[in-house]
Length: 295
Image (tube, rainbow, N blue to C red; front, side, top):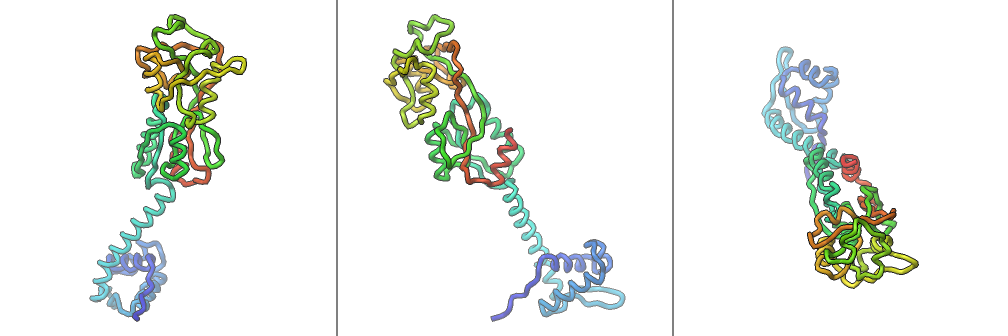
């Protein structure tokens, strides 16, 4: 079996400099090395290949037939290697690749997609995919590796997930237009504790459920959820149809139908928290770049 010659990129670049200049002095200046060192590299390459690459005289340098063949091949090899190594470096720096981002629809008015666009503008070689869902499902997809990060609302804590704050906002009450409080300018949340409630199913998460119902609780009493839905748009349309009332983050109510009346909650300090979620063990540079570009 023939031995494969061991010629590195440095020696190929040295050969190409001499092949292009046909002059060792000019080639050495181009490479910014001493001429004797360049001559040594060329001789080492010729020994490794077992052929002469140049015909040298005291007055000229010319390529041999083998040298002419290597000139074409070496240029392609060096360019390909440089492209491949550049891609490796860009991937390592998080400048190339793919990022799959999940988001809750209720966060859209607060600008997370604009943050994604800012990242795209800064890193155009990173392909970004967007996936809609609600928080618990997005987190499940994140942990399965189907998403790289997600903007979620009031998530349950999980040691496998790292959360970075994005936005905090107040809650408002939503009642149907024919409700007894619809004419009011504001209400106390506890006034709704006996009303039928429309909200997400339990799988939406304990924290989300507790935060949304906390403004209504009084003396340990909780509102009774009589109708479930999986998006805020559906929740609000069901409220507008008279199936019950709800308490929602302000941004989630911006597209409420005209059959719904929104009421500020008097003296309520509870907040809904939007956060970026990512796997705790995922320290890739591409994620660091996203966080830095969207701060």
